[in-house]
Image (cartoon, rainbow, N blue to C red; front, side, top):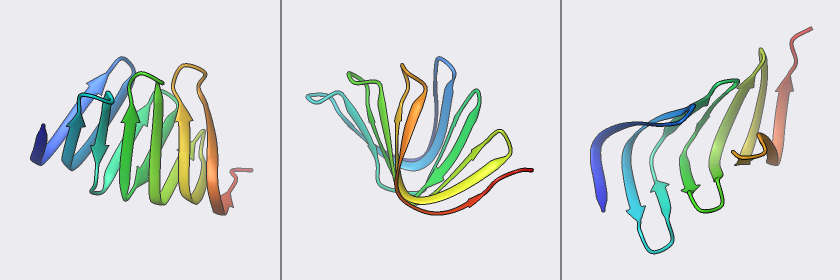
Length: 100
């Protein structure tokens, strides 16, 4: 299923917006090939693209990622976020601005 022209979606505590998305039913993945803004209760992120793996409860953000959490800003090439555990791993971190 291809979706274009803008998409706003929410599930549980998460919300995201993007211009384009492709739902891959066989692998239970949602792929967003364009700029995306992703948000959960205590986490906000922006990236060039995103893949959500529903079965694994995993969100992969790629390309010019900006993560804002509790006032701290981190920039990286990518980020893997495990929804169930509320943990993330940065891929090729670039910069961090930590609130004093």
